Every structure is written in C-alpha cells, then in structure tokens.
Length: 218
Image (cartoon, rainbow, N blue to C red; front, side):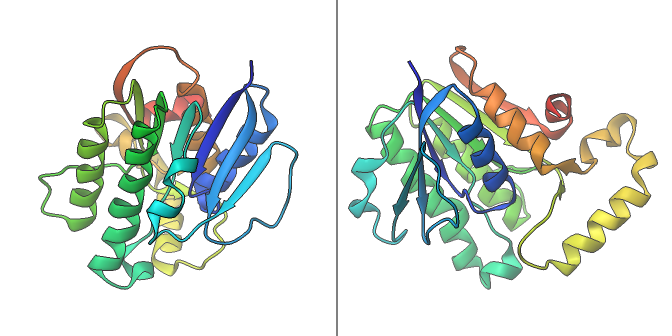
C-alpha cells in the first residue's frame, strides 16, 4: 500500500528537489506539502496545505502520515537576525516534528548541517545541534539526520557569499581528499536522493549521516 509523505521546506534548494523525487516514486501515494504560499504546479499526488507557521495549533492535527521530511532552513543574512534565524531553523522545525510525534508518524528525515553541535561556539552550528538533540528525544521510531556540507544547485535567491564559496570549492576540489573530503561541496540532488533512500529502510533508531556518506547516493 502506498504511503503518505509529509514535507516542510518544499520550496527550498533541497526541499524542492526532494518534493519532485517523492512525487515521481511509487512508494508514496500522497504527498502533503505544508507551505506558506502555494506551489506553482499541481500533481495528482500533491496536497498543498497553506499555513501560517506562527499558528501551529491551526495545522498540527493535519501533520499525519507515514514519513515526514523536514527541510526548513535559512541563513543569518537572509533571516536578518539571530531571533528570526532561530524561529525558522529551530522553532518551526521543532513544532512540525513534535506534532508528527504526537500524531504517531513513524519516520522522520531532517536536513541539518555539517558541524552541527549543540555545544558549538558558532551560533549556526549550535542551533542545528539543538534541533538534532531535541528531535532525537521525541521518541519517533526512525530518525535520519543528514549533515550536508556546502550545497550545490540552483537557488531562487542570490547569495553572493555562497556563490563565491561554491566557486572556490569547485576550483579547489582537488584539495578535498583524506580528512578534508567531508568538506567537499555536495549537489542538492545527491542530498535529496540520500534522504529518500534512507527513509525507505525499515531499521529503527536515530542515525546521523555526514556529508561524505551522502555522496554515495548521488
């Protein structure tokens, strides 16, 4: 019987790629995409649920299904402040995960980041680590946390600093060997494919997948 997938962050770089994968695969008969604004296309398997992220009580009961994919995330620059960044990367993500656990969703996939660490002195890494820690404590049967390095792909918004980082990463790719290999940039399709494939496993537990491990799913 085809499963129901839930996705948050389906308009982002990895999220939009992942949504296309979910729609194309036979494993899922229904894809529930929780979005702030309507997605620009329709599909027979796609259910768009328009929400106000600041009113989780208005949609929490709809977070039902078999597997949930959490792809929410932003940057400090785009968010504009630490508080705004925290709201998107921590609060919104935890609200969705908590509701999923309450509604007995069995599997959760989370996009985190290379270097995520709740004890880190780097705010970005600390918040990512906090999310990983707190989601892991929700009691969901299976949790797959992926930690990609610098993401390659076509973004809708212009991130100058990230574009420079991507260019340098490509020019200096020959340096990312040995212990540095985990820092090598990774394609959005590789991360999305990894998330999908990992979530098809029946193994229970919480698993963390570093960027170097995701490369094999490309």
